[in-house]
Length: 459
Ligand code: GDG
Image (cartoon, rainbow, N blue to C red; front, side):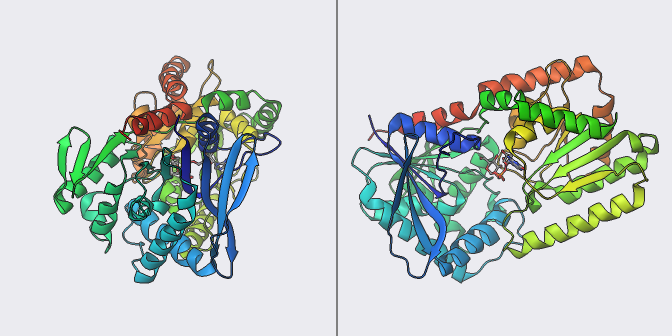
């Protein structure tokens, strides 16, 4: 049986205590136990001069291999090209995407360094699985070093429409490098179609058979594989003692009011400002509902060294302050805005206590919070998921969720009202449809879809 080598920006080591981890980490670790192999990436640490020294760790049957990067690498590759160029562009924000040759150069350099470092670890029959937008050119860098193995790539964020991507100076080159992979996976057909559109119309790729593109003698198979959560573990988490305690704490502090919950990394793609404005609209349009509800927004900060993240943080604080200032009373605050993270079990209890899960990104590859919210509900009295039609998750969840356009405060306000008044039978019917999907297409299913496609490639 082939081994599996996973390569991503950061790796996740199983915690020795067996503590809770993200679903993606759990699924990839399970894959590594099944196939043996290892998980390679950046340690998160910096060093004066790049040496390529690999730090191996083995924990709970999973081997990880990490390297330190130079400070300049981190500035140009991680904070620069990955988070100031590609992330905004791939979330349709060309207005804040920064195009600098220094970033592009640093990005390529780090990908070359990864390729040099991981090369000696790859054995002839191994399958290689590269994760996400930090590593687009890694496959090509490996091919250039003589790697003939099966190599797959999965993109966790959207692939932008052709005319947006065309604004990136390296767009053609970057897309061309994707043909070094044997399989490229996306969360939705929409992202896959955007890739195909660019490859065919800008690069002249040819669709050799359905789902297979050829360019310059190399073929790549495109697959749609929507990621899920570790549903069984999340359902267990929602029944844990911690979850029960946090559920009780929220119900008590809600004091009979309906809670609306949002949980997001503090990121401009998550549509938090628009969410607050939509909720404000609801408060304006329905004065009789004001003291009957409140919004709990949990938003742990991320990527704080990137300026656009500092800006969104400041403007959200101002907006929450303004709305609370305008509507709060001595015994009621409309928005509880919290900038810290919580353990998964606690989060599960919070989800369960919320009548509405408000998940309204402006653009999102998938969005796992939508699925976690569903998994945490009480089947006898579930809450309602309000979901942005621009989240990848909308493709799987359109039947049970109330879909909204996050750019429209009016639509958001109407949807909140609809959800608050929704009869229990309808909530149950919708939840069942959602839960069927969340249970069936979980993160283990996702992983299997991808590794099956990669294994099917002729060695
Ligand atoms: C990328 C894509 C795609 C958040 N706050 C807390 C906490 N979280 C956890 C959530 C959830 C995860 O973080 C966020 O997942 P998302 O899917 O929403 O978003 P990204 O981080 O942007 O991830 C995305 C994903 O990759 C997978 O492919 O779905 O579209 O952008 O699991 O629960 N977890 C805990 N406490 C918190 O306060 N424990």
